[in-house]
Length: 113
Image 1: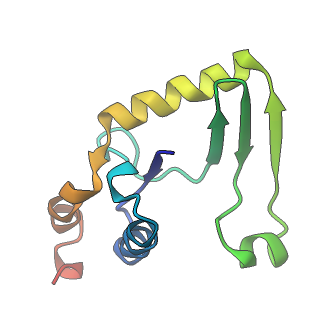
Image 2: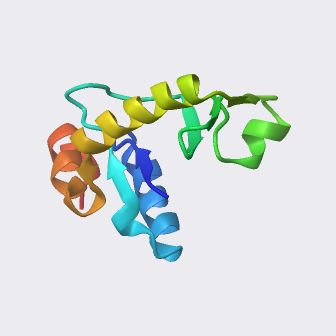
């Protein structure tokens, strides 16, 4: 499992770090490289380059119960492969979670302690 998030919203990023750390997966977390994107609202899961879930659903109960966001599961090596390639690019260009404090200081100097 690998997870990519964004440092654009420092409080949310810290929540992500805390959650992922609690699961023992901090080494599996990277931040989007803000040189390419500021934020990515799309969420997805790629499984073995054969299946992909594509959605805008936030990982919260409010998103599902109050906003009625939804996603779709696609079984297609071609489509899953496309999203896997995009993920690999973002992962390779991403910033390891352990190095994101400097990024946050650069974009949100008043938000850091």
